[in-house]
Image (cartoon, rainbow, N blue to C red; front, side, top):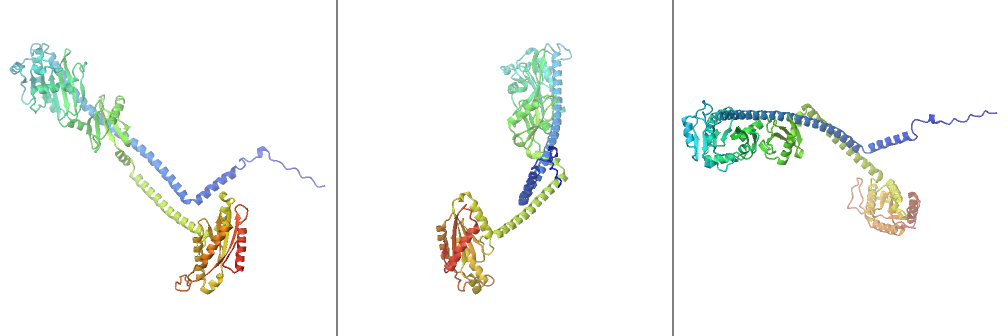
Length: 595
């Protein structure tokens, strides 16, 4: 007895494959789809790859540009910080000198508390010229004699001081003020010679005395000068009602010079035993302030110095006056909250520009350097390595050249593929569709849901006695007849109909949404036109012989139809039409048979 085979061992859960069933085929299918898509669209694939390379390169370039931008802004911030330190040192030096003169003047006034020189300190004795000037003190305008070359000390009578805040004639202190004014005339002259050029320094006494160094050249009445001083911020802001702590005051005077430009001023009040006795002030004109602002700046750089209100004191550079006051005020506010000691920093401005700024010491003034987009781009380019720029340019040229060549090759390939597709679906002699295209058109029409329930007609036609045409006039003339028939068919049928050459002299016409009656009528029209279409014969080279007798030809046609979606194939429908075509030939040719 034959031994029984052991039953098969079923796989357990532990013997299952590590991959989920169907996972690997799905992955392979995806890879296959990708491969097919790449092969079908090589030009698009190249463009995508080129775009990825450009995107990555651009991303790296933008990243490097941002790094270089930050480095450029940091360098400019450091530069403006150093310039702000220089401006701060210049202002501090001027204020210290002004404060030193103020202290000396107050020391002199304190040594004569009675108001008359010599009463408190025997070393301070008024000379004859001082006493003579004192005797003229009530004149509308008078002078205190000074040494040759020193700026004059001017005075006004008590009537000129009426109604002027901060001014009042005090006989008990007038002589002392005259003594101090004459002493300050020499000090102011020396201070001006040793200080910065084009600087004006002045002393104004509450008794109506004043001395200006250098001396004013304009013939302005002394009373008018006193009234002008009384209205100036450097005098008003130094008075006790606005400056109770008797501190030095400073700031900008907008539109204060002869050209309507800003000047910078600093003032120190003089007080004796709490009594306001006058003001020592220094004024730096626009050119001097501008030289301080532009000293150390780059060529072609625009620099702006803002006062405590955010208004420009000085604007120097090619873009002066083009920046909005609102933007500058914002930069000033940011700088004032940057802490002490101030540091150079950068802030974004309008239209991609930047403002590099630094507060000047502990003062309420701010130095600003605007940087335009163009200037920032130049700074970034300067930071790039020349070798890197050259290599980048070469890489761009190579990529562009590769893309151009590849695009030309792909275009040529697409043209060749188009011609191949045309040859695969078109008859090369007549330009009509071939049997393959007719088959595809029939399948598309039958599968179209819009054609469901609609009639579909097919006409087959054959040239009568075509062999006789070839034997009598030659094959070149036979080709000419075929072309003439193709042209007549194309001009007779609708745009949605398909005319195809399916054999030597055999043709077929597919008529969507057409029944037997309409197809028969079309076939009759076509038959009549062909019978009335003469065709010029051709020589062996295909050239038309226009002077020769034309070729007359006819055709027999068979018509068949079906309902789309009924299941009939193209071969079956064509067999029916061919059968009727043969009937037309048996019955004498040059006729249409539709049933």
